[in-house]
Image (cartoon, rainbow, N blue to C red; front, side):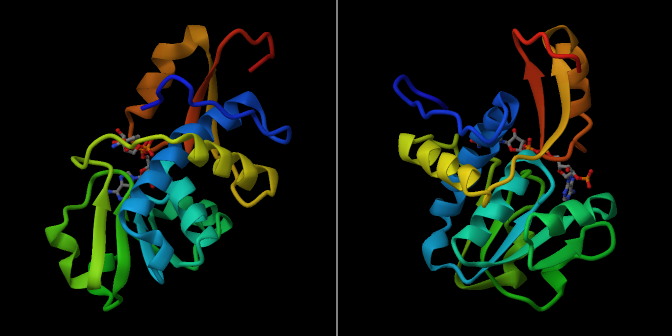
Amino acid sequence: MFEDGLLALKPDNVTYEEAAAVSFGGTTALHFLRKGKIQSARKVLVYGASGAVGTAAVQLANYFGAEVTGVYSTANLELVKSLGADKVVDYTKEDFAKRGELYDIIFDAIGKHSKSNCKNAMAPNGQYVSVAGQGVAKVRTEDLLLLKELMEKGVLKPVIDRLYSFEQMADAHRYVETGHKKGCVAIMVGHDREL
Ligand SMILES: NC(=O)c1ccc[n+]([C@@H]2O[C@H](COP(=O)([O-])OP(=O)(O)OC[C@H]3O[C@@H](n4cnc5c(N)ncnc54)[C@H](OP(=O)(O)O)[C@@H]3O)[C@@H](O)[C@H]2O)c1
């Protein structure tokens, strides 16, 4: 949740829609990765690596130096690899929890995988964090500034699936509700640019 006073300048090298997309997925991913103790994590698994939160989480976990495994479906393989995932698991073909790998953080970035189903894949002292049921991500100004810096350096790439006009808001919601968007969907407000 954004509170009064939380502000950062938009990086010059991204559009307003891209900056908005990263502000949503990036701040959420940072919050939960920190909660999972990302600074000391060697191996991180991001479940739902192709969503708004997931695409940011893969890139941020990479930035913090972890080996990142992204769980995706076939259509999103190239996207998840392009974000820097070291390893990938197709959830339609394989259960990551049965691969015999252990992770320091399992981050369910779409809130669809239960903690109990992950227990065989947790390293000793490993952390399970999820966007579902663990409170709302707290946004801090320093998080926005870090995201800005990483976008400027090209370390963090915004992923926008579709852009909609304000008038197409209902269509945008319908698309998001399919649960299969890649990264973010953005609404353009007050722009006269053609979509
Ligand atoms: N707690 C908080 O503070 C907070 C903040 C922001 C968001 N959220 C929540 O975070 C969740 C994620 O939102 P989002 O916008 O990032 O993503 P999203 O739109 O919910 O996720 C879409 C992506 O998830 C993938 N996906 C769908 N089912 C999957 C499955 N079973 N296994 C693996 N991947 C799967 C889809 O890929 P395929 O098409 O390949 O299936 C698609 O790329 C939402 O529930 C949102 O409410 C929580």
